[in-house]
Each structure stands twice: as C-alpha cells, then as structure tokens.
Image 1 (cartoon, rainbow, N blue to C red):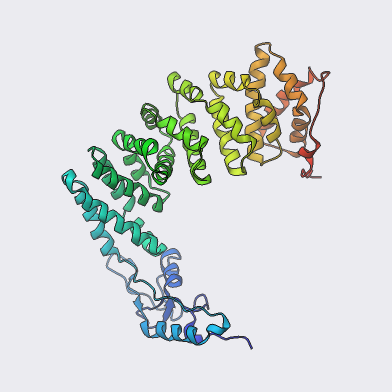
Image 2: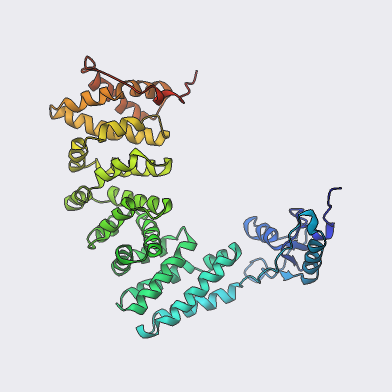
Length: 426
C-alpha cells in the first residue's frame, strides 16, 4: 500500500512534505523555502491560500517575519521516524536563518575592524569567517548577505588590509578571498574596488605564493575583476611581476577544471583589452601560443572553447601569428577541431586558421597552405559552408578555400571520422 503523507504535513504551495514549517501572520503554515520564493522571487504580497495582504513596513517592504511552527515540525519528525521502514528519512531540525538586522550589524563590524590598527586584524578574520559559515548554511542566508551589500563590504575590507604588509593581514585577506567566491557574480562596485592597484597586488601575491585553494580563489576573483573589460586594470595587472606567469601556471599545471576555466577566461579578457606593444609581446613571450595548442590536443568542450578564444585573441597581434605559424602542431590541431567540438569552437578555429594562412600567403610562404590541405582543411571548410555558419565565419572560410584551391594539386588526406557525427539539414 502506498504511503500517504498527512495533508497537514504538506506545504500548500509544493504539496511536498515540509522540512522547515513556518507560519504567516494569516495563520497558514508553509515550508520556509517555498513561501520565501513566493514572496521574494515572485514579488507577491498576499498569502497564497487566504489571498490576504501581508503586513508591510512603512516603506512598502513585505514583512519578512516567518514564525517557525515547532509543533508541526516535531509532529513531522515523529511521523518520519514511525515510517522509516517505508524509506522515509527523518528531517533534520532546521537552523534559524539569519535576519537582515543581524547581517547589517555583522557587516558594520567587519567594516570597522578592517580599519583598525593592523595588529587587530584577527578580529576582522573571525567576523569574515562567521559570514562564510552562515552563508554556507543556506541559500536564504546567502541572499540576505547579498541584499545587504556583502560584496562591497568584503571588497573594501580587502582593500584596507592590502595596504599593510604583515602575516596577520595576509591570513585575513585569504579568508576574504575565499568568502567572496560564495557570492558570485560580484556587483560592479565590488569589482571596481578589488581592481585597485593595492588589491590587485595582493591578489597577484596569492596567485603566485598561496596554497592551492588560495590560488584557486585568487583566480576566480581576478576573473570577476577582468570582466569589467577595463584597459587600465588589465595594464595594472600585467605590470605586476609574476601575475601573468601565475595565471599561465594554473593552466599549464591545472588544479581542477574550474580553476583552468577561470584562468583561461581571465587571460581572455586581458588579451582582448590590452593595447600596448609591450603587453602584447608578453602574452607570446610566456609561451601561451604553444601551451594553448598543446591543451587543445586533449581537453573537454568548455576548456577547448576558452583556449581557442584566447588563442584567437593573441593572433590579433603579428607576434602571435608568427609564433603560431612556426609551431608544428598549430595547423593540424586547429583543423582537427573543425566540426568536432561545437559551433563556437569551429568559428574560433576558422578565425585562427584564417589569420595564420592569410598572413603566410601574403609573405609568400605556401608550405603551410599545403600542410593545411594535407590534413583535410579544404574538405572541412566546404562542409562548414554547407551546414551553415555566421556571416563572418562564412567570409573567412570562403577566403581560405580560395587560397587553398590554388594548391590542391598537392597530396590531400582527410580523416573520415571527422564527419562521422555530422548531420546535414535538408
């Protein structure tokens, strides 16, 4: 016989067993998660059952007070215990979520403690650790912190501490970086504060000298800052000794896939928002071109797309094209990626091949064009035009076909497996 959950134990919104029953001022009990979504995400100001308006403050904000219904919760827990043979697990006693006033008070303490004398920074570290623990307890707590401006508070505290150089400050900054990663994406104001010279220097220090977790947190925060796509911040970071090398090392010696992706995205924003000649040369000098080609040999879809995006950006510069042209694996690997990974990867690959082959053709070097033919570039480019692509990619593919057609009398070969999963539309 199928087990039936008593109606008084189910949430009127989801009709599921309540895990954290709370009662509104209207006297109706709901599961906390569902009623909070109804009020906060749905923008509703009425009780779902009675349709009565919920009490509001003078400024029109819906009354956030939800009274825990301990009696119902205990009855539900007892019912779970009595029916454990039916596979029902006892619901844990929920933690009381933090209130907005408690959050405001905690954030004010962090702001004040970060401005105290450096030897007292341990107090700030304890406060930030409390934020981290509370935010980790529930999404509700996390949202409460975000609503009260946690990003700006932690970013400002990090900036204050980055101005002083001692072990205590470094320990607190490390905790702040770790906590910031819980509240992504960061707002523009927070990213702007973190993009100051002092903050960037500290983040770069963790990138080079921190533990594995610190380096991971540092690159995730750097990615957020570089999303601003501000040339000034890119140049500041490039001028910090070892910062670019630290990012490259995270790609070359990966900690985890997410860290590799964050590193590649950070480099992508840097490459595409840097204009000085010296900066462009640095991307090439650290061996990015060769390293990216080698990564493309064996990587997943997401990393492949990001690596191709970075490579395409580097090859906007003449130095990048020269380095890619002289590397033996460049053309074979790029042709291999056509039609094999995703539409985005194909478009990046066509763009990169266009930059390499057109540049070399202009210089009178036909050897690399013959190489492209031998690894099947001509056939793949034809298929790309047949199955459809963006206008920009179509123009580049057509131009490449014209260049390659001149040398088609040379030997050609193509791996038929490249077309195995291709579906043509009719």
